[in-house]
Each structure stands twice: as C-alpha cells, then as structure tokens.
Image (cartoon, rainbow, N blue to C red; front, side):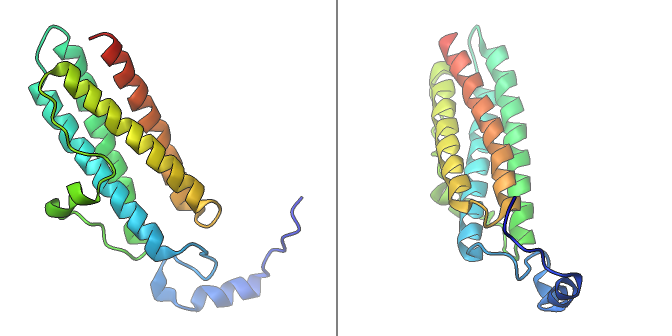
Length: 176
C-alpha cells in the first residue's frame, strides 16, 4: 500500500475552479509542459515523415514480392497517421499547437525520409525508421515516468505498434 493521502473533495472542487481556462492541465500536472509539448511535436513530425515514406513505398513497390510489401506499407501508413492524430490531440489537450508545417516536419522528425531505390532498400529504410521510433519512444516513456500518465500511455500504445511494424519489416526483409 502507498503512504499517499488522497485529497479531500472540497479541496478537489476548489482546485478545479482555479485556472479553469487551462482545461485538462490541472494543478496536479507535474511534468514540464513545454518539454512534453516539444517531445509530442517531434513525435508528430516523426509519424508524418513515416506516413509519407510508407505512402511513397506503397505506390513505388515493384517486383515479385511487391504486392505483399505494398499492402504492408499501406497498412503501416494508415496506422502511422492514427498515431499522428493521437499525438496532435494530446498536444491540444495540453494547451499546445500541433506543428504541421511541412518545412519543419523533416527537421523535427526523429526518423529520416529515405526513399529507397528498390523494394529491398524501401523495406530496409522502413525498418531503420521503425527502430528509431522504438528507441525514441521508449526513452520518452522513461523520461515521462509518472509525471504525465496520459501522455505516457499514448506513447506506450504507439510503441507497441511500432515494435510490430519493425517486426513486420524485419520479416519482409528476410524474404527479399
């Protein structure tokens, strides 16, 4: 059992009325909001760069195994866009602004946009990008710790899917 004491109802009610314009960010929010917003926007950029790379690979895939790979690319592009939406929504909840400026997406992204010249290079580059996402999101989760459980949980959900993506790309790469 924890030694933590729960706040009484009256205090909770009074605190909720202070700074009400802050929305979901209450007095109990202990993370550095500006740093969390920066990490969320960098991750948003990462997801968009991955969406764009996967979409290119979907359209450019050629060769005997292209159909299988293209379907995987399309599925991953859709899932990466869902990740981006979750991150953008959280940014707004925390009182920030999601950065969608195309000129800044590549600059802010953890992963690089590398097109790949053939199917094997495309899969390889997607695997590299997934591995970058896995490592960076794992570090973000550890950095956040207990200071922002909602943001941490979003990153944990995204991380689980990024690990699946990396596994899918590793399997595809073995088959090429």
